Image 1 (spheres, rainbow, N blue to C red):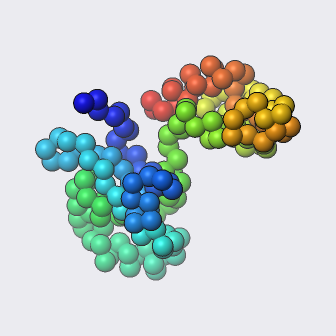
Image 2 (image 1 turned 90 degrees about the vertical axis):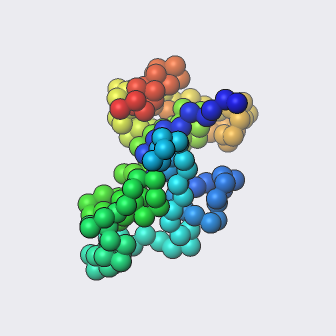
Image 3 (image 1 turned 180 degrees about the vertical axis):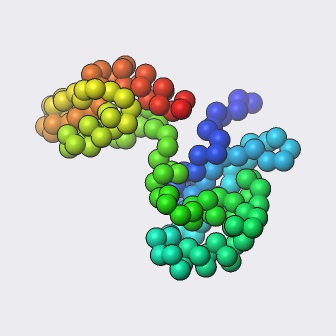
Length: 165
């Protein structure tokens, strides 16, 4: 049986269609005490993380003993405590990796968004292209799109380099 390669210790939001959607909000792959890679799900999907309020953050972290002992990395409490840390946003944890297979994650209709990702990847330029009659699947026909880097190959190379950091 082939084992799926996963990135460890990088929380992700559970997307529609993924296992656990509607039951939990986030998941992360970690190694447990035995050295096996396990998937840990955590967070209530029906609640917003209101961690910007000092009082709410203090109460949550006290209730879950985050400062004293957040528990082992392969438990949900550890990752919930991590999400409720001060001076870090949830996006800081969940948007650390870019999936090179997800075309929608690096193709934009706004120039500014493409430039922002290009800067993040370390590309100096962005490419502009026009999708005539819907030749690109999943994109609107007759629409101008922007993507970071000069070519797709260069962009994929930069994404691989970025994900290794």
